Length: 216
Image 1 (spheres, helix red, strand yellow):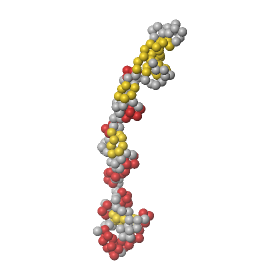
Image 2: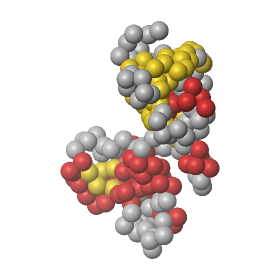
Image 3: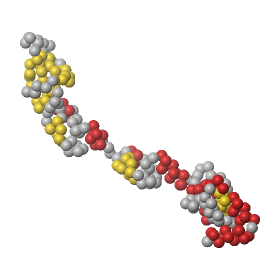
Image 4: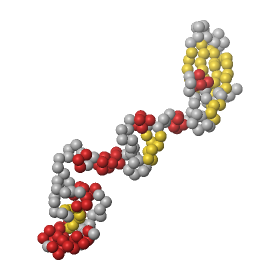
């Protein structure tokens, strides 16, 4: 019999008031022992029944571990550790972010209720995707779009530098309309120019010719 220190788990009732029992477990956690307390025997603990804890296989990692019979009776004792329990309860899957490609875990309910069919690793990536999709006439607050030319250029992949003098200081850059129509804010009608070059292109034909040659 195991001589390790015993610890109490629960008490049980008994029809005979003079007899009651307690279920104790070995300090090593491998044995389960019923002790019956009989007042008529000098109040000593008398061993009534001893049962050994069976070895079961973890449902997640397949490792063998000892499970208490009371766990198995209640339908528990399926996982060897808390980490395996959490891993075994996961019903979702890992998906890649549609913006940056980072893998992230999504629960089953999130996979089912996605309207767009796209998944993101963070709110930042989701906001970037929404800002690229719902712009211009697709945005609910869109009116005319006459003042959106700078935001159109900043969202594009056009290098942010003057097309003539190549300066890249954002404080001196302006957006130039090639056909001089401020309502035509399509990307192929816009170009970066510094304030100095922008003035020269608008007022001198020679500078405008240089600009048109640089655009080819």
